[in-house]
Length: 127
Image (cartoon, rainbow, N blue to C red; front, side, top):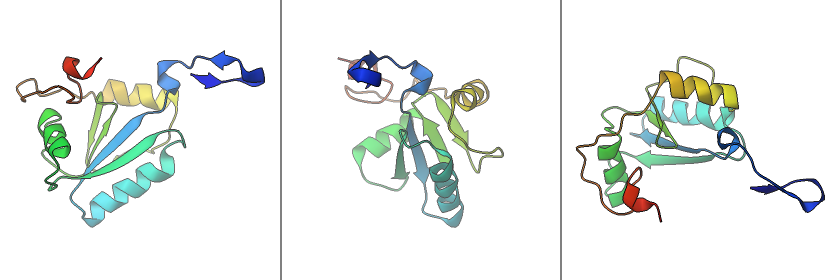
């Protein structure tokens, strides 16, 4: 929800809600290039998080397992989309682009990964 003209509440369609973009990085030049590409092409409302794959952070480890991260850089959007490597297409935020990504780069969650309350994609994380 956002406040529209004259302080009326306007409900935005799901495609227009801010997206969570997570880039799994190894800190290499290619990873930094992908971070730059996404940073320039994302809209101001989208949230960009860069996660170092060798991090000891438990949340990063869980996401690596859940998203089956086997290469860097890997871009994950809203736990629904997964792009591995340097995108071979222009990166620009928008509804049409998001639909393109959903169709061509769907994320298949690793259902064998151990999930706990609060894990991304876990029914237990929804309250």
